[in-house]
Amino acid sequence: MTSLFVGLEETLPDGMALFRQAIPRTSQLSILDAIQAVMHEAPVFRPLMPTGARMINSLTNCGEWGWFSDRRGYRYERLHPETGKPWPDIPAELREVAVSAAARASYAFEPDACLVNVYDANGKLGTHRDSDEQDFAQPIVSLSFGNHADFYFGSLERGGRTTTLTLESGDILVFGGASRLRYHGVRRIRKGTSAITHPVLPPDGRINLTLRRAK
Image (cartoon, rainbow, N blue to C red):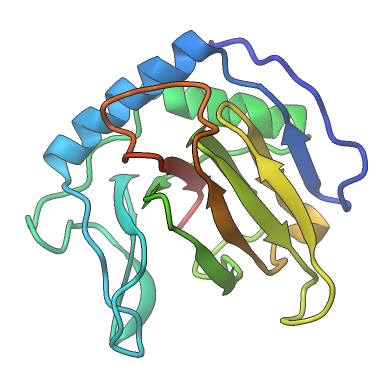
């Protein structure tokens, strides 16, 4: 199993854990190699939101289930909407890193879905919470690659005060327990800050992998 260099942010609310520089550079590149293969089999796309507008970021999935959106709403599907094929398996090294990080945060984790979010230099993610899963006892494990991102989180209710964390390549954020349904988002991508280069990373952008237990 890939070893993690753990630096825990002790000021985070109950249920959240941030592991700084948790993924060694060689493992980051290896995981991105695997994600490049995932994208070859399951090309990225920009889904419709229920409003009918296109999402800002491109995405794809791997695992038994893939997150999807259209005018019917947000949900998980077994098949890629364009190819009609099942999503590729979650790469073994990626799964091991995510399960290990969850364990260090005191969660037993059995992911069956991984959302691959691809941010360009101007990418962002609006305020939302991850509530399309069936078992909220399972955490969300988020891995960052490429440029730094200003990630923010609030409370269990929409609106109010938020806290911002700058997530860097190789960081792992775990949120579950009392914080599992906190609202959160991404304000901006910090251009020119990436500690790694890889052909699958968008120009001056970022890739975020969020592993979940969907069903």
